[in-house]
Image (cartoon, rainbow, N blue to C red; front, side, top):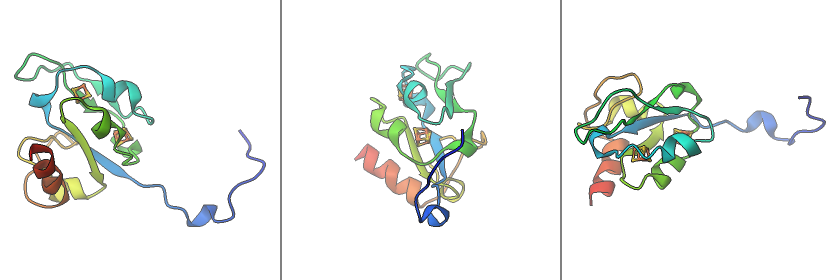
Length: 118
Ligand code: SF4
Ligand code: SF4
């Protein structure tokens, strides 16, 4: 599609890039995050969590724009997003990084987890 006009500061606007972190054992597999992610980053995985549900996984993690819609819509506080790069260094003991690795340490995501648990 060819745009006939664009904002004057188009070249200065940076599209945010986020990483989504999933606390699998909190998930009840409702699929809200999958359905409403505007970038179709998520799908329900084939794996089972401790409750017997299929938690989501990121299949297009590079497309995440850190809009936090998944975080806002999740009824079980099982998913959240952080600025790209923050998840590697931060993360939580429970949250799974899109790469599949268990993240650990302290930082932005830790603060988010604390806020969620508070
Ligand atoms: S933060 Fe936004 S773009 Fe990223 S996974 Fe969640 S809903 Fe999708
Ligand atoms: S919205 Fe929350 S509970 Fe529902 S599938 Fe996504 S992570 Fe799981």
